[in-house]
Length: 601
Image 1 (cartoon, rainbow, N blue to C red):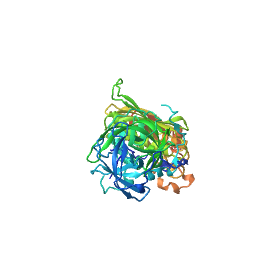
Image 2 (cartoon, helix red, strand yellow):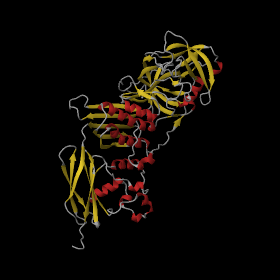
Image 3 (cartoon, one colour):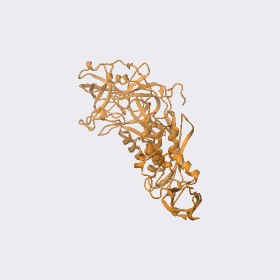
Image 4 (cartoon, rainbow, N blue to C red):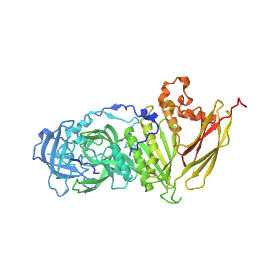
């Protein structure tokens, strides 16, 4: 059994930045408003009046944008259990206009008998007679609007004023709608397919940038595309409009898209380039051409929405620079702009996969390399914006490594429970090179032992990949209350990073949006060289499992502070030094420092 919308793409990269934020992934509900009863403009034929042998026609687009009539015959009415109470079996009759039969992309095509609307074509079968299909009755489809819509908090925009498989297949509700994806790598298509749990494929057409707005009404039989992303990246499912109402609403598909209930997905007029025959199941090649409105309901019996209105979206940009190309090469620097649906949970899944797919596509390769990434965020409540820069090296898959951290940060920002930041925009700037821009820690030399309260002169030898070593010098202060011996640690930011002991131990919690941003930025970066002096911890470091058993007086300073506070304090007292570069710093070395005894002196 096979759904009929467009035939066969998209990667949520799983990465744990810090365990402290796992509890933040929730969002408050948005106030809902009632949709009201949907009354089709078209005359309706109730299912109870259908009889086997009745003839009529279906409306659908085979090529271009104009629907054509294809003759059909009623075969039977099959009772169903669930929200869709009946399925009507139809058979397409011989026609000069269509020798292929049914095709994916025809979902939602309205079927008329005696000039009255019966319902929408919705289901067919693989490797079968492609003239036979199931129709979802219009009575069931009208129930799509029985539940309230969920409006975006930002006021909706009026487009008129806006600027420019077989019979033993699983039940219908378990089938998913093929998604077509343009502008991304094949890997991203496969990854997003898994993340969204829908069949997907790379679209056989090029994207044309931002879709224009068009206030022309959708019409029954017209091809329509429901969008998840649009602009220089497109993710859309193409089906057919079934019915419209005088109040500007429409019904389409005859089955769900993602079964997400109340939604705000843009819908666009679509053009069918060709209808292609296939032994498995014929399909349409189609693409969106102009935004027409918003899908507000995604239910088992179909999708429905409003024409002439468009919900604000999550804005995104991708700025790419290939440092291995000549400065005057047109492919050296590229900027891509796109938008994704205003759904925090879907947006979090889409953005990481899209950015990875754009990186793969623009770089034109997979494998080793170094990337410098800057994630920029702007939104309501972020008057100055927010940025984080980090560097990444991979010996096998730079594209995957470069996106992981940013994907998790975007998920945190979209799903955090503290305050509304919508509308929100993300910009992902990445510069790449195949060269391993890596500094290896080769040696650490400490000038001499020191007195408590004195300073240590530290010389660090770093070796760039296959180049002569370089030296960096630091001064580290020995605390006045230090006794015995201290441990000097020199490491790369991605090696044994400092952790949020206070949060992990349960002594503190992230209690606000600004605090969350501060602690994200406090995390060590891979391009940092970190020199730190540890005292009173030479013999035994804190056991995170025993922290809760201590009294407050016994807690270490790090167990009472956020990571950002710990870093600020230690840099001020001189026990922590951080140096940034354009290179990823790898490795770790230690030196034991014996303190002079002032009493003996």
